Length: 139
View 1 (cartoon, helix red, strand yellow):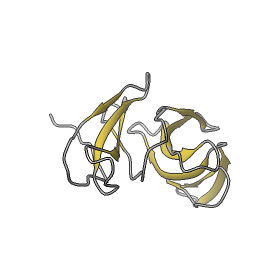
View 2 (cartoon, one colour; view 1 turned 90 degrees about the horizontal axis):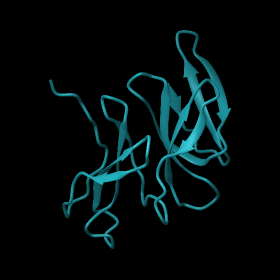
View 3 (cartoon, one colour; view 1 turned 90 degrees about the vertical axis):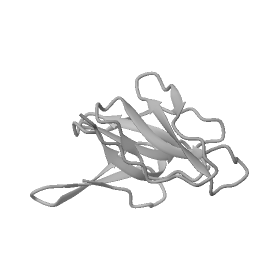
View 4 (tube, one colour; view 1 turned 180 degrees about the horizontal axis):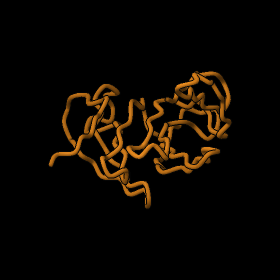
C-alpha cells in the first residue's frame, strides 16, 4: 500500500501488511501524488515535481530504496495530474493531460508513456475531460 501525505518535501509513506507498519521513504521528489504499484508489485509510479514548482512529471521508483527515475519530460509539466494506471504488462503508464482544448483546463485527454524510453502516445482526442484511467487485459 502506498500513500502520499502531501507534506512539503519529498517522501512516500508505505503501509505494510499484515503488521501495519508505517514507513516513510525520502525519494527526493516534491509534491508526490497518485502513487500506483505496477502489476508485479516491484515498481511504484507517481507524479511529483523536481523542485517547488507545479511542473509535475511522472516518475517510477524501483528497488527496496524506491530510487525514482523520471519517465516524462513534458515542457511545463503535466497540467492538473490525476490518477495513473499501469498497462497489464507493466511497460506503459496511462495518465491524463491537456488535450485538444489546451486553454480549457477541464478538457484532458489520455496519454500513455513507455517507461523504458519515455515515448508518449496520445490515446484519446475529445473535447470532454477524461481522467481516472484504468487499464485491464482482454483475452
